[in-house]
Image 1: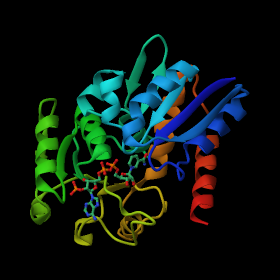
Image 2: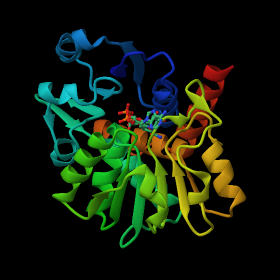
Image 3: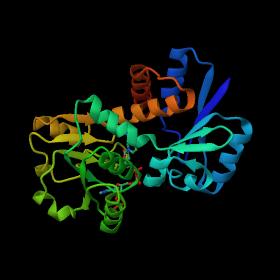
Image 4: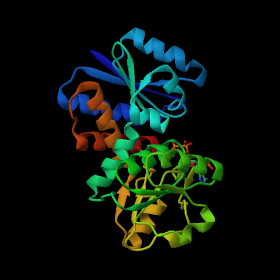
Amino acid sequence: MDCYGVIGHPIKHSVSPAMHNAAFRAMGINAVYASFDVKPEDLKKAIEGAKALGIKGLNVTIPHKEEVLKLVNPDELASKIGAANTLKFDKDISAYNTDAYGALKALESAGVGVSGKTVLIIGAGGAARAIAFALVDRGATVAVTNRTEDRGIKLAQDVRKYGDCIFISTTELEKLKFDILINATPVGMSGYMPGKLPVDGQLIKEGVVVFDTVYNPMETALIKLAKMRGCKVVYGIDMLVYQGVKAFEIWTGLTPPFDVMKRAALNALEDTTR
Ligand SMILES: NC(=O)c1ccc[n+]([C@@H]2O[C@H](COP(=O)([O-])OP(=O)(O)OC[C@H]3O[C@@H](n4cnc5c(N)ncnc54)[C@H](OP(=O)(O)O)[C@@H]3O)[C@@H](O)[C@H]2O)c1
């Protein structure tokens, strides 16, 4: 039996085991996916141990996505982003960032093209970085805003080497004309700041596409407001499932059923909030 998993700290609320095990079952693949709580000081030992044990692939989540790059061979996109969330163990350990793919695919499956569009990203952490690099790569103009300005300015500078990207202060946002707004902060997330908006609600105007990367709950305050204003919305759960689909493809060379994985993820989320 082939073994896969996810490492993070904390990890107990991860829905990745439910998603991947459902895909393995649906496809009749003799494999199992488990979660491993790995503290930052144990990351190197965990990666070496996984290789020694013959584990085929790992997802990597908070807080290891950046640190893991020192221990593996990242592809070009993961190197640019400076973070990886998927490892494949062969002779070497290859590393990929499938969050970027997940975000683009979630937009695409909602019928939203990004080329030539101006996209406002709220946040400058790991998710925002992955999304910003992916968007400029597809010909979008990106504006980044962040609570901690220095971090947002650094992200904009890094991305500008590859495409159009500016930093905009939260106090200047009403001056910006944008087509797509993406929340890449945890604001609105259950257990963190449920019911809160990551930006002034006045910015959510009819005609803007609103993508909330927060997936728990699925209907965040931002998504609810966007729907009320008649905006097209893109759900974080779709990004989550598509990043899993891509990781599965990297490991097995096979495309898993999106709907099966999404159902499993939603059921697992219901269990964690019960
Ligand atoms: N759907 C998916 O597949 C998926 C994948 C990854 C992440 N996500 C979502 O994205 C969120 C961010 O993940 P991450 O990995 O980027 O985290 P991260 O690296 O810790 O970055 C968090 C970002 O959110 C900002 N932030 C946090 N609390 C805030 C607050 N109260 N007000 C304003 N800004 C705040 C931070 O600003 P500062 O720089 O000022 O601290 C930072 O820019 C997650 O919570 C998750 O909901 C979704």
